[in-house]
Image 1 (cartoon, rainbow, N blue to C red):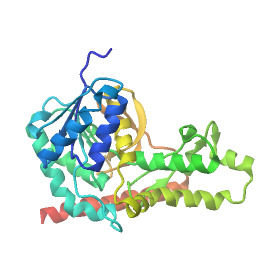
Image 2: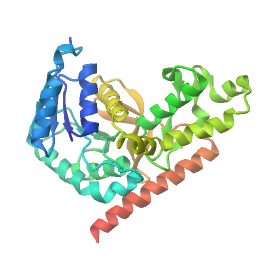
Image 3: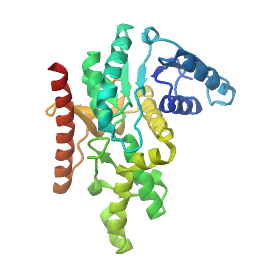
Image 4: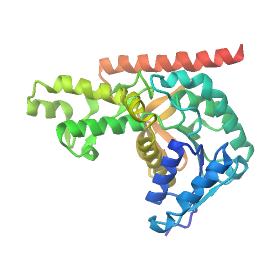
Length: 316
């Protein structure tokens, strides 16, 4: 039995925030969940609805709605608020709409005396994690974006589906921007204990090469496809955020592809990182092929141009 009471606040009770809260409740991750939204009545209703399911949850969870001033003793504040991506709209086109929202939220959270970790899911997540870091004054290790955790899950799922292997036994990662310039690290994909290259040699299937390219494009464009069909993505990102939260609260030292601060580039980007209750402990740059190095350089350059261009416009 844990003596520590884990407290998590969720800012934004839209589809993503509530999918996260629902996953948190069903997995029994935290003892207390605080829901915050500009629409206070909506947050109260969501807290009531979730609370009614507590008899079926694996552990007791106290779920309440409240205000930014209640964030004082929270271990993690998860920010999902912001305008959603519309059909045909890129994540980067959301910057102008969501930057001011993020700055306001973070300033209100910090005014409460909050001294925990910030976990950002609002899009474009890499850029808005940078905004949150600047607005918070927290150490870079304690402001984390969901990064390419969801992209990597999609990658593993599609590879597992193609090879007819449990995706939990597929080890693969997407890095760089959570967006159009992201890249697959093909050179480090393992199917079980087999490196992908050896696995493909054993199969000797001429269709594999094109299929793998289609798989990556399916990963990269997954959000557009889901949004086109149902208007938004929220279940999988809710589960991704729950996985990150578990790694933090349980002090796991897990390796997850999170949006982290790259000192030399002055941007946040998705890279495998060791994370625990103290935040980001170490960034693990994978060994990349020359082609992959070029792809990553382009992705980081894209993020630099947008992040620094956004700051320049703000200061003019």
